[in-house]
Length: 435
Image (cartoon, rainbow, N blue to C red; front, side, top):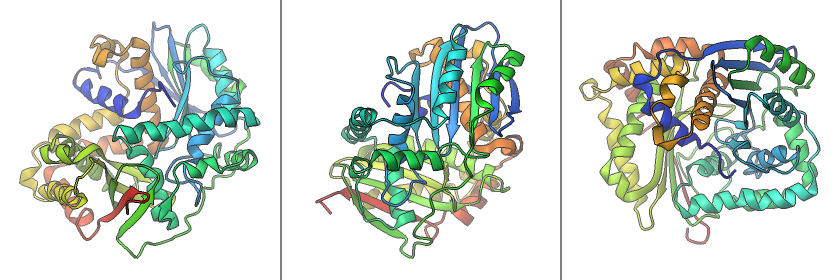
């Protein structure tokens, strides 16, 4: 939705203050409600701001066949179940390949109202035809906006899901949600949005932890959670390593993926560090800057069946996709030799801190990073820490500890075992009618 705290901006903000912001992080209090909802409270003394985030399992890379972007449209409709949104700075949300998060940004004066809104969003309130009429164009306009700005990476994840998990070759990014009717959307929401063991609340601010815990139990403890299931893949294995599909964007988009172990595996922290140095190289590479718009990588593309490391790139008009592919391969191959991995020690140390504790708000707000307000800084700290808790749960401390010990030799080892050209699978999305 518009005016949201963008995930990519948040990540850049957090990484820019790593070196100075771990002096005295917020106190982390974790508890589980009587119905199984997990809660993480980041207590920050002497602040009037309070931010509340709910993290939910509906995501762009697990939508069902031909239901491209349904999770995204449902995000819009869920937020509207509590009435018109007068300020997107107060109520907002985002649906990504990680999941969905619904946001309330408030103060010590209205935090209970924020909890009530969040509880209603998770209570499967009825959708309305009027809300669908109003929200559908907004959801569609987001895809139009990113296409115009060569920033199609997030929506390319939804297309990748349809191609790799469902065998689709003509992907209607707009048509998938245009054809959805209200009752089907509501049924889909009821089945997949609020599930056992897959809901997390993250609350950051100055509310007394004991008062907060009892209030959260009162507001959320009676919410019924559905069984933990996800839409099944309709194609269980892709024989073709190199897929092509069309979509209703004017942008050609390229993705490559590598199957890697799940976050609980001993190799995962090393792959996370590998992705970090790869991501830096990709964003700084002069040749890729000439060929692409938005380009990024990640080691956290997780479907119900498999975890992937990926690279995703929106191509500038006229760019040769083979040159993009070759350049990325060259950068990955560079890390196959330990002597090329001199950045590993520094990055591994900082990532270990990143996974160990939230940033210290008092230190961060003195930096005036990116011209962000103090309210947005606080919200960004909570949003990103909540995402880590949602993704990695009780495995978070183990990952943090293991990250610190990753060596140049470890990185070279996983590159040679998981990120070879033989392991690579690709998807090229081309504008419909230009294939």
